[in-house]
Amino acid sequence: MKKPEDLKKRIKEILKILTKEIPDSTIALKFSSPLELLIATILSAQCTDVKVNQVTVSLFKKYRSAKDYAEARLEKLEEDVRPTGFYRNKAKSIQKCCQELLKRFEGKIPNTLEELITLPGVGRKTANVILGNAFHLPGIVVDTHVQRVSQRIGLTQNNDPTKIEFDLMEIVPKEEWTHLSNLLIWHGRRTCQAKKPLCETCPIQKWCDYGSKTKQ
Image (cartoon, rainbow, N blue to C red; front, top):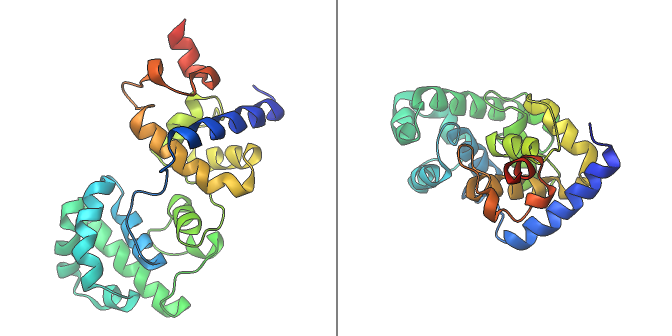
């Protein structure tokens, strides 16, 4: 197990290199409000961001408030989100979430993790996506890319997303939490892919346990 000070040095170098390599490392989901990002993030489960962005073009024009989602006919909302897959569950989650927003938060998205995770369909990952990208408050998003990349580069030995989140919080400066999340997501998509990672061209191979092994 590496010492925290060694991991902090490693993450500092990784942040520097990936920031230069991926200057456009902002969230891929398109939104113009915290509510829109909440809906888009729920829809992104088991679906590509590209597809979600295609669907939300018309969805966000039709549903402009939590009240619109809360009072919609469920069958109609299901049809509107159908292209993202698992549309029945997603429509139900969106509607229940927006009903709770109306009931407890006057239809507005709360800006704390503790409040966000009390909403139906909102876990720590979704909450941190919203905090970091809609409210510009520090949050570490542990999706499949962040989990895979952080394990490969030796930042965590855990498999549980919450434990990984806390491992990263220990070694990453708080002001970099959202930035690191977006960098690792993009690096996971472009280079450190699940089945065939491009280790030969990886800019952080020097700092990667997985890449070092493949080089041997």
